[in-house]
Length: 355
Image (cartoon, rainbow, N blue to C red):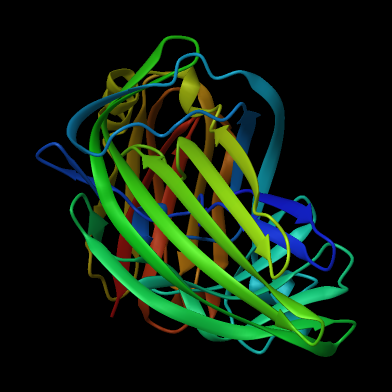
């Protein structure tokens, strides 16, 4: 999910709508986008700026679709923050998880691995309300691309003031149901866009009654951006003795709006990121070229998404840049790590293997 959060209050419940912006990594093979942990997964210290907009119907599924959402009306903005599990203030409340998404003060706890992103818990901003999943909700399986599909079920406890007051159970279905061109506000057209459809049902059971919640979420991904560029969600909440209440939400990522797909792809290629040797036994050399002056962040993460080393975080002049990395020199064990390079709005990742 990287994913924004909204809360809807009923007579006896608080409803959480979770958009997984997260998502997962992306590579291009032919014209397709493929999601993986490496390039779109959750890693600590990442930020996801989003713009809230008016809702629009999601359009059709299938290949070579054109989704024209150029008339979305901007309403507000927010930023989601991904934190390391052990540095987040909510970690003492949970026994599972390795990365946390914070949005609007609320905390969403995930277990991020190379094969999946699973939600294991949630805590409200004031710490009063928690969800602890005994069987996690699988937000994403890796790799994932157009035509892929999976389903499952999840369950857990509804906790208020450290007391279990009810249970949560439900089903989920995730499908790569569309591929094509996405048109967003300010005449920004993105090609080779993957749409992921998620249908999630949740039954909340309390001593005083129950509620059934159905969320249908659509997320659009491009290869050059870690988080979804657009998210649409429709939620229906129905109590035992009440009529259904429907709400909708929408958001897009404003940082992607500043450049077209073709321009971003050209900038990525222009970086000429080189990582060698890889695998390596002592040190890995990292080189890239900047065509113009800009802000650079070069960081290393372990496979749980925890930041282990920030190599560079500064504004640099154009030219060839040289760096080295060694896990052993930091007192870390050998194994797999993720290198993330961000120059301006352009981001590249590489998997490192220290022997």
